[in-house]
Amino acid sequence: MANVISDETIEYVGILSKLKLDDAQKEQAKKDLEEMLDYIDQLGELDTDGVEPMSHVHPVSNRFREDVVTNGDEREKILKNAPEERDGAFVVPRTFD
Amino acid sequence: MSREYETVIGLEVHVELATKTKIFCGCSTQFGGEVNSHTCPVCTGMPGSLPVLNKQVVEYAIAVGLATNCDITRHGKFDRKNYFYPDNPQNYQISQLYLPICRNGYVEIETEKGGKKKVGIHEIHMEEDAGKLIHDEWGEVSLVDYNRSGVPLIEIVSEPDMRSAEEVIAYLEKLRMFIQYLGASDCKLQEGSMRADVNLSVRPVGSDKFGTRTEMKNLNSFTAITHAIENERERQIDIIEAGGSVIQETRRFDDNKGESYAMRSKEDAQDYRYFPDPDLIPLDVSQEWIDKIKSEQPEFRPEKMERYKEEYGIPEYDIGIITDNKRMADIFEAATAICGQPKKVSNWLMVETLRLLKEKNMDAVDIRYSPEHLAALIDLVEKKVINSSVAKEVFEKMFDDDTDPVKYVEEKGLKQETDSGAIKAICEQVIADNPQSVADYKAGKEKAIGFLVGQTMKAAKGKADPGTVNALLKELLS
Image (tube, rainbow over all chains, first blue to last red; front, side, top):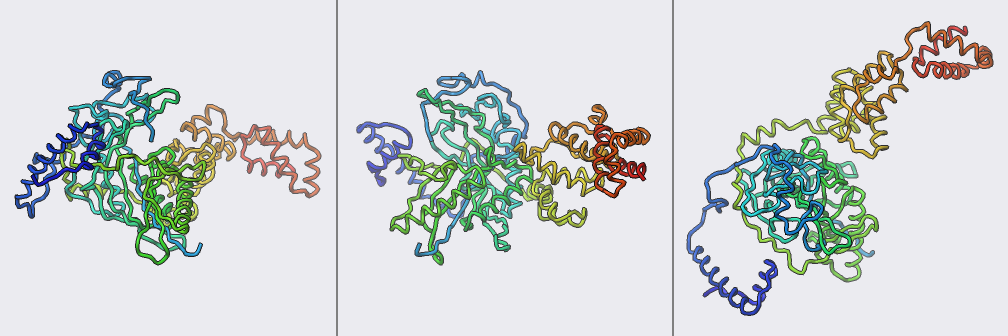
């Protein structure tokens, strides 16, 4: 167990992921994260000098769409995905900049 | 103020690209559609939907990069910028952090003292726009329209190379010129298709260390940008002079009040946890592709101005105004090619077009009339089918809805009376009706002829050539 997740870190990760954790859950999450980091540290044993970072697992590139409108107005269907709908808009909790 | 301060400014400029479709889906980017009528599972962030990159977005980004002397990144990719906000249905924005499409460029601007200066471009990256939040004034909710979600943007990040509001405006005008000439965007600040965030700090003159900077948002006109820069410079100097220190923060400028205020700092720090987007395939830009885009670059303003001087022989003042906007320049060239009268075309652009644009609060990119119709109108005047005051009237109609001037003149019966017998009859009548003016003219009052010409034109309902009338009257009175 080389990695230690501090109370501040778990608090911060909670804020970023919009999760409210109780004390028991925090302890469990710390333990899980520490184990994950230890596991990932094993990768550091590999010599990666001169190896380009991989950005994608498949050896393909340049898949494009032409700039042609292919979607029509499917607002009715799309709005079925909204938790709540009003005047054609998605309704969300009151939000300000 | 005991010390002299230097202002250090860098800009982040977002430009909405003029593609027909969004960056990752086949939804239309057209303005003014019904709320959420241009949406699909991709741009509303539905699970399982997959983005596919719009090729035109890459081509516009490369074209802007080439125009601004950037290196084009040969192997690129997209990254996810994670944040929670309801205008962003995926909870991440697809952007480029690690391998932006263009890097290390510059644009040259003219400074106040008549010199030239290079403003460095750190990078240009491609990304998607967010949706629009509509706040319900009395309710407990906000409403979201995702029509703008996924509209392609490029963000042009400058180096902190500018030192005054004038340099910032010169830089923005230069960028706007390149982008409009490329047809990559209409770059309208008011409508948000070009948005500038200003990063500003001050430091004592002679210092080579940067001060703490603030970022200002919500600047939607050159005037607002100038005001915001002057205001923020003073604010920071006041803080430093009072012994305080500037806080790094994002501020929102209120152009009505003429001051900026700190945006509510989010309790959670900004930590976007960027990582490569696994849904998108990497981008390989070949030298052939770059060469092809380069070969399609239009003639930009400086070269155009040079060529106009040699080719058309119109005044430099005219050239400056006409080439300021590509739409004007295009109309000028096409209309001149048809009618062969550069100065006449230029006059219609410089006088009537500018007057109507200003009157109707329009931008030159919105000019609707075709060069063919302008050339036809010039031809009608040239052939004396209509006189210049009727031409103005026809032009106004043409300006509104691109009416064909030949048809319009025909239908409205605006043709000049070319039957000299008929004009002569009117002249004779006017002479008979105005003995006093005739006597004045005969007594040597040259000006009296003007009154008689006016009366004749009026009697002919404007459809006579004033020159012909003048000559005829003189002949009859001699």
